[in-house]
Image (cartoon, rainbow, N blue to C red):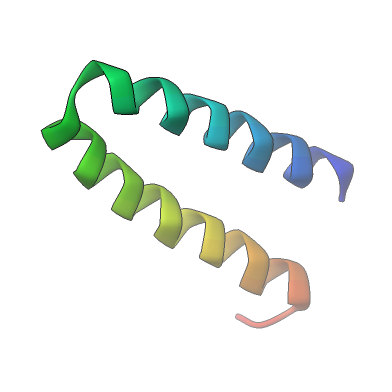
Length: 48
């Protein structure tokens, strides 16, 4: 439970760093990360 929250926090920090690095890469990375985050949240709720 706690580890997933930490993982999402780290993910958010990585995204914040990527914004400054490369916008084109970041756009794709943000989309994939959003999908992964929503996947984690749905898994957390017990939805397969």
